[in-house]
Length: 216
Image 1 (cartoon, rainbow, N blue to C red):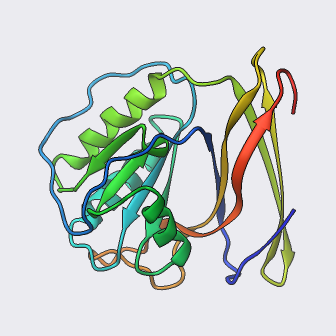
Image 2: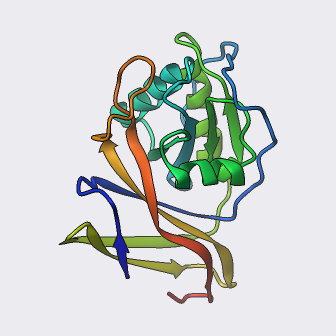
């Protein structure tokens, strides 16, 4: 398929292939959390994916952003995240509506399997570490997802995605392919004046997926 984008600095693609778990409703405003640090490691059953709901005016979101950047940079876990900048992107605000988001920041791990609300400079990263470890230990369907992307010019990318089902039963789930920028070149900054990272621009794919047993 070909995905048309408005920008020409597309830097990264992220895939989420999972059955979505609804998140509880909260209110869009600033929030804080209490301390709890992660102190354990485990074998991960899959790559954990986080959706970070934020806005350029959100004062506490810079702490959530810093924590996600640090975890990703250290490479402790198989982990990716996307920044859903509510006030800058209509697709991001639409996704936040899907997730029933009211407070910022809120981070949804594995489509809402675990949800962390709020942020502060001392404790946020510990909470996120624990959520990532917990998500990484849960049982998931045995699926292989492969992705290839080619820049076609004129703000267009050719993207091919294949999903192979290793299970003996059929699989029904949801596939999202996020087109993001590694570091926003559009002036999307958190309140610490740091460019948003993996800022969501648009979907390349967004829909149901059904795969038969031992099939692609």
